[in-house]
Length: 294
Image 1 (spheres, helix red, strand yellow):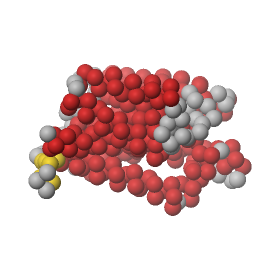
Image 2 (cartoon, helix red, strand yellow; image 1 turned 60 degrees about the vertical axis):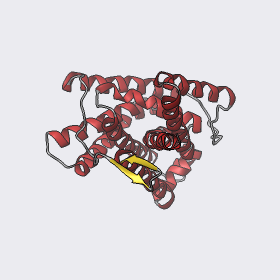
Image 3 (tube, rainbow, N blue to C red; image 1 turned 90 degrees about the vertical axis):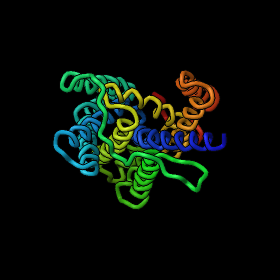
């Protein structure tokens, strides 16, 4: 009984860590521009497909394919901002227009893949060793869960160091308080936003690779990011620690529900958590105060 519980906790943390990569991307964009970028799921799909075809068609190893996927998704995210979001920002301060545009962009990206590569499900080649590792005789953990936890943690630590130690990281933190004031202080706002979108795209690609390996790859896979968005809301939209905390809680809740109740209740629980958060603590765990909720 204890071993089953510990295994489900590990599975939940593994899934939650992948959600965290995606949720942090949501929160990064929201902290700067105060809108929910629902095209984020499209960036995840782009990363997954680049990795898939880089390995199968170009014969790349997983490391090279993953780097290509991260770069590709990051560039797509930057171009999305440049071609769609920036013109809207320059014409209107209403962030609701950005959110509506992001929904349309997500559908466009999905259907581009449906038209070009087809809508069938694809299995990503094995990227981690199969089998399990015995952890002190207490629990056996799959290599996939251990690697996903470790790699997700590494990316989140790198992001934190980037935000704390680099000039552009400090500029992002300043812009999260007030974008206009950061611009008046000499920060190149458009370049800053491009960097934020690139980072969000990179994190989405890593999440896309893990989700493709855990489940399967298909054009509508970006719909999974709605759970990462819910995790960001639970933690506090715009709060990066909140996004991580909310994701881990959500991953644990999903896996424990699957193990002890039924997998059919997973989505019921997730969306119930969202509703309860909005009813009783709309600012999330970390009480992130926001100027506009869209």
